[in-house]
Structure formats: C-alpha cells, structure tokens
Image: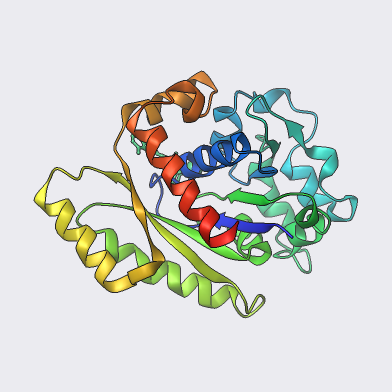
Length: 253
Ligand SMILES: Nc1ncnc2c1ncn2[C@@H]1O[C@H](COP(=O)(O)OP(=O)(O)OP(=O)(O)O)[C@@H](O)[C@H]1O
Ligand SMILES: [Mg+2]
C-alpha cells in the first residue's frame, strides 16, 4: 500500500512544484514506484519533466471530468523513471465546468482508486489557491507536505493552511500534516536562523531536519526539463532533496 501526499500551501512560489519534482525523481532513482500528479493549470511540474502541455492527448483535466475511467489513460512515462498525470491548458476551464457537479471534491479520489496499490509514492502538486483542484488533492491524500519559505513572515502562512486542513477533515477525517519542509533558505543570515528556531519550537518533529537552501540550480533545472538529481547531482539543492527523501522514507517507506 503506497502513500498519497499532497504538497500544500496557499501562498504561491514557496517550492511546492520544485519539491514534488525533486523528491519524486530521487525516490524513483532509488527504485520506488512513483506517480506525480500535476493539478496546476500553470503546468509547471509537467514542463519541469520536459513535457510540452500543448502536445498532450490527455491530461488530468480528462481524469477529473471522467473519474469512472480511472487515471491510467492519462498517464505518461517520463525520462525520470516515474509516471506523471500531466496538466494541460484545458485545466484552467475545468474549475467552472466542475462547479456544479455533485461530489466535485472527490473526483480525483475516485479516479485513483487502483493506483494506491501500484505505486509506493503518489505526490500531488496543486495550484497556490484553495479551489476545486486543491480540495481534490487534499481529499485523496493521506497527508500534506507543507513547504514553508524561510523568511520573516513564514509563520503567518500556517494558520490559513491549518484552517483549510480542518475544513477538508469534514470530508476526510484522517488527513494529517505529514511534515513541514523549510525551503528557499539562506541560512547565513541571523534572521533566517531565528525564524528556523521559532518554527521548530512551534511545530517540533513535524519539521523535517533537512532544510532546502536557495540554490540557483534548482531554478535552472525545470528549464532544461530535467530533475535536479540529474541536472546537477552534486549541487546543494540535489543533496538537500536527497536527504529529504531519506527522511520521508523513514516516515512513510
Ligand atoms: N530552493 C530553491 N532555490 C532557488 N530557486 C528555487 C528554489 N525552490 C524553488 N525555486 C524557484 O522558485 C520559483 C518558485 O518555486 P516553485 O515553482 O517550486 O513554487 P510553487 O510553490 O510551486 O509556486 P506556485 O505557487 O506558483 O505553484 C521557481 O522559479 C523555482 O524554480
Ligand atoms: Mg507550483
């Protein structure tokens, strides 16, 4: 039985997609069966894996519209050794199309009914807003991974997310916070060290020991369509995500 994890944080640009992509590829390299799901109309995850969303026959859009078909028909195998349910531009219109549908938060859960037995890890990358896509991601997940950008207002972002999680617990009581990942860190500054301590003081063991540093290679890799573990395997970013994957395996492996 695999685990389904959604990256969650309503604030944009905190490293959700980078974490999904980098963790997923490290786990796949270690022989784990990994499925990534791009639920963001921006399709950053899809593009980061070298796939052009405009050339897809199917995407997660068709999966959400036809959950009875399952999800396999929309999957693509990637060079990174993992499977992807990609996003396409059509997804942008799905929000409205699904608005009136009964059980619209549970479409992904329905579509993924067989995948939990096939994969060790299913990682879902939702957009930075609380809409139908994020709700679908949370409703099918066992736990959320929370990327928290290490800056002065980091802790301000948590209450909103915790509120979202308690909201989703009405339809999915077992949804847990799986862990907090400190991202985009510049640990050389005193401020960032103070904030890190504050977050660890408040959330304790929920916070992964690994901190993801600010690393330009992590920003470059998606443009090359290659995960960081291959693009720059010795970079600080690759080393950090590898360590994070090891911690994740202790929790869920
Ligand atoms: N540790 C890092 N070091 C340097 N750049 C990073 C790092 N993590 C992410 N980035 C870059 O910062 C930007 C935002 O990261 P990312 O796309 O992962 O965030 P996101 O939370 O998915 O954003 P969105 O909310 O828009 O989906 C991207 O350009 C990414 O390449
Ligand atoms: Mg993203």
